[in-house]
Length: 533
Image 1 (cartoon, rainbow, N blue to C red):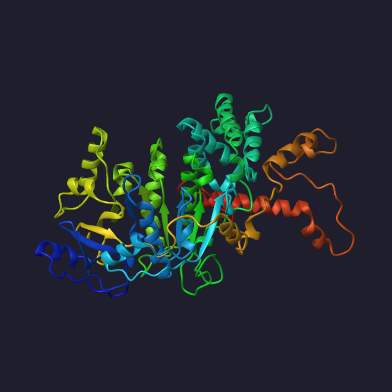
Image 2 (cartoon, one colour):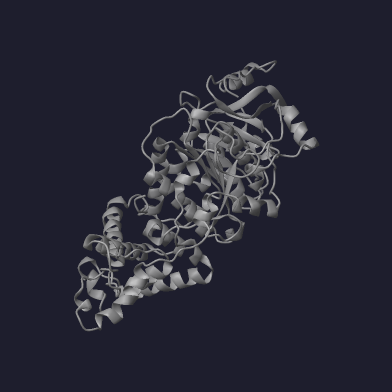
């Protein structure tokens, strides 16, 4: 791949000029071969510079036009060049990337057309599932780290209710009340609307009973759909996504030195809950943004993140939410992370976000209705000047063909190139269920995340207040939000310091102080937070 030259052969001058725009000197990914006047030219390769993958991109096209295979093709080549990849597997057909592909007439014919030396190959993978719903290592987030803005999107709250939820989080942060799961949040909401809790927020606006009722009903409905398992501990550490294949991963090539790990989030079990998985994907991205240092432009990205069904993220989003998305996408580039949004048409993506997507792979669009016709015209306007009639071209593309423009090594857009894309080397489809289960259970991460943990947090502490405050002896005089005293006496033996440091009360106090100091400082962008690791 590195340093491969593009040749024009017998192409007309106009087509040869397009090909020259893809003659990069540094490492690049091979997308396919140029199509001109209906003919594929295997000597005219269309490529994307590896260093430009952190400039973000868009993969778009109608259903059934080959978007998933394009993701697989790009992910394979990134992994082969040592770049970790994150893929959201909405339909359950990307898991085959861990297994070698199967040769058939269609694959060999495509390879011959585009000048590809195709051979079967699998890539190192980890498989995840939201909250463990489905086959995968469970991915959980605490309510605290998820933050009020993303949670409001999941619960479909309006702007006023979102602001009230932010006030609730602020109170919990100030008092060191850890919101680990949804019952913790319910407990804090109930406390703040009780006679005892109402004065707590009086000076900063308060929490109306009606708004609290809406939030509680939304939480109850959310849990009734089985969504409560997504919130809790152990919380997923997004730095797991940045690993290489060495020492981890499943599938052919697992443990191979230098390969980037492909992290596949299996979502078929929650594909009927689009707001949930799209918002969780945004949490993963926001958490990476929160934790990673600034690195500027690198020779290759630290991670490329494919955000499937991206239109679901923007649907019904508030202005503040869209601004947060725009800021995250704009700034995460300097932290070495590339983001590819995957959707049907560019008009699904707000203009401020679309302007940051320098690499474009546009599959076929269909124009069966007036709305389709408008979407087609809008898509054409988002491309630079082209030697093709793009309105006609986009409706006539076959499966596995696309209109491509990327950023050159100098950061300038390349000429628009109609491209027949290469065939993935890995299995184009899901792996057998038993093999997937074995890969998950054989992962070194399974023991770390598989079993949920329910430790003392806001629910337990607020539940302990009622009897404690009614008892004699002055527990009721303890400062609000402080952990209740343990009824156990320090064990005999050892110094007084050892007894105090080893006590449950001291550990609880440390956790509360650390939570309060660390969390208030670190909330940013989406209001997300992370306990210091």
